[in-house]
Image (cartoon, rainbow, N blue to C red; front, side, top):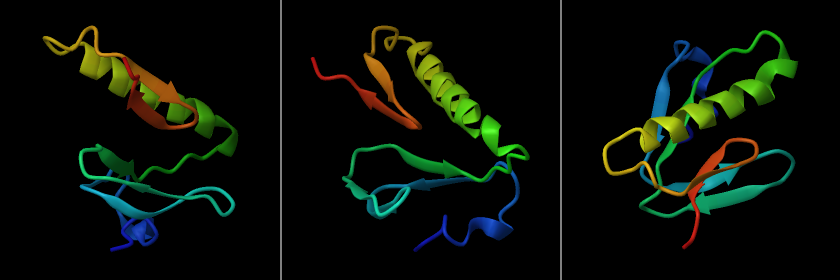
Length: 92
């Protein structure tokens, strides 16, 4: 179901989580898929000044990385941020 495309009526801060992504769309004609095992989510948010969006995206990514690495046993987890809003585990 295309939840994000139809997200205009969702309350601010709603988080949609998916197990897989089969029809991801980005800027322009960029498309992608994400296999099972990935953590996929989208948060509904309204940014009043579009120029601040890149900073908001980066801060959200940084919060997720720091949150995961603050968990017992995950301090050394090699998480990386790929601009603008992807987080991945760096290969060994």
